Image (cartoon, rainbow, N blue to C red; front, side, top):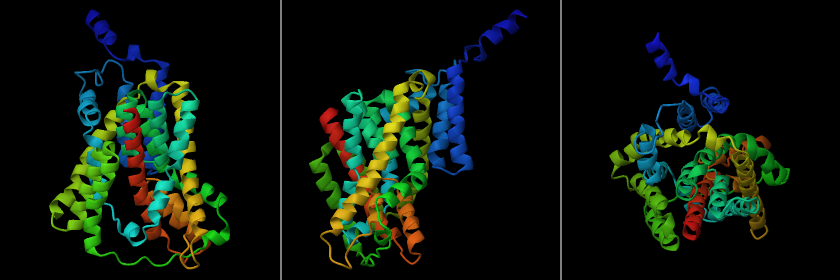
Length: 373
């Protein structure tokens, strides 16, 4: 009996708290969104499981220096390994053709970052320090890896909540964006048909990542880890001479990196750190940032139309794709446009600002690191 009592006393059941059970419920919501609804399952599933593990007492999985998942976090995220590898895979899957065919779309990708900066200043006014405000602001770009990268460097305590917020908004693009897009546009504007994009030559596609990496890194050196890997992945894709590397970057490496990104990020969300009013407020501010980014992209497209001739005008819906949720935002733009005109094919046009938005968010993160890092 004494051995039995000793075994029971050493189990985790006696150390469970109501707060831990609440975190189990939050993990359950992520499991539901990932499995039943198909919302960003590749990230929400490992993040949810990480949350569950972080709130199981006595496991030692996040014990500094010893825990298994702590090692994943320390060597993969804190040492800035995994997010750049994710960008390598994203670059290998990215087609810059729409941007090169219509360079004006780059402006929409940059313009949609307005929400990032507005939310940065708002978070600071609400009492967050500058580093925390930067991480909260970057959520508005709906770019999970960039949010994680910046959070790990500037505000590790907010990493888990910021990452979950970013990926949640990516998953909710079809819910959050359409009302904002319809509110800021007229039916006539939503029916604008854009000219068919010209065919982009292979040489242009090969030169672009070299040129973009050089110029952007020279301008914002702090963006180098993410931007370099993003453009390297694109070089793998467009060169057509390293198909094995391209395939590995898009598939095996991307999948492995995703596992080792999601699990430790979720494991940072223990009850003590997560169940605080300021963390809940982060989700609200992040949502506001995402909506402002969507709206600013639409409004900038409308402003550009004031100076464009008939036949060259931009469908303002395309501006909403300037957030970094690739390719979900572009698909939503196409779907909203198709409701007004079934023959209006906006997907490829929307991919331009969508891809440009990835670059814009990385540049924004680089600016924050330069000023606050």
